[in-house]
Image (tube, rainbow, N blue to C red):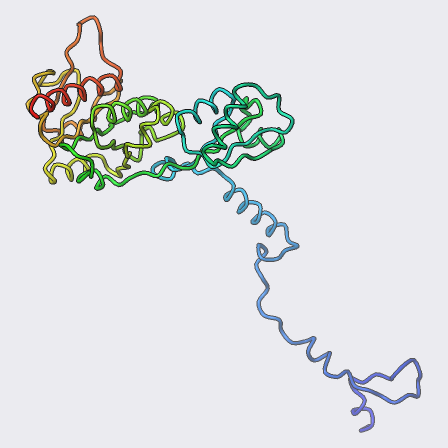
Length: 320
């Protein structure tokens, strides 16, 4: 029956049994065409595997970095509390914004903080207490918080040929983890004519707000350089004509019998507990100790550095 073959795949228009026949327009044929390979379950938005993958990715992005080194030292921080904020502003800790809670009960510390911030053109922002709680990670902020930017570290090469006059004098820290010690040493370097401080990227204190405050503003004048490898950096200074002396209670030379004071110097200060590390100690040209009473076991690292810097400055002044 040839008439039947011409009506395959055709339907009648409307519900009438006797209407003209129309074709499907190729819709059924296109519906049978392949649509490519089936997407993975993790790529299909309605699949639970997709949701699990997105959740894992979000968690990974929001997780705090555990890596040390430069990135850790360069992270900014927030100073919380009226006393801490006003003290930081008094000594010139660099800040990007002062946050003040709305309807704060103002006292002398708040008034002084606002005045200093205005004088230093630090933006003053009003914030809700819940926002301050989040910014300060739940610390007791008393309605006042100061945003401190990451410290801009120098490169050790910048200290090899300092622009400041006088014989080069640099202090390097080996295992000093207390930022207050770092701040005190920066202050002593400034007081006794030094040119800069070197800190390692790892296992060392960084220039935090606490270090800034302890330096009493000296951190604004004395550069702090970041060394990827302290031993390698010390060798670079030796190649440039510096002598490297390390401070240790069992030194081969006692102050004031230091015959290298007039030379370009790097003074290496070790941690109070462990002293100088082995590789750093082997790199030093001389190990120097500070004479003291036998009843005292050791000096604070910052004090030991200050005593040595004073002696170097004294000898240089006598020879000038």
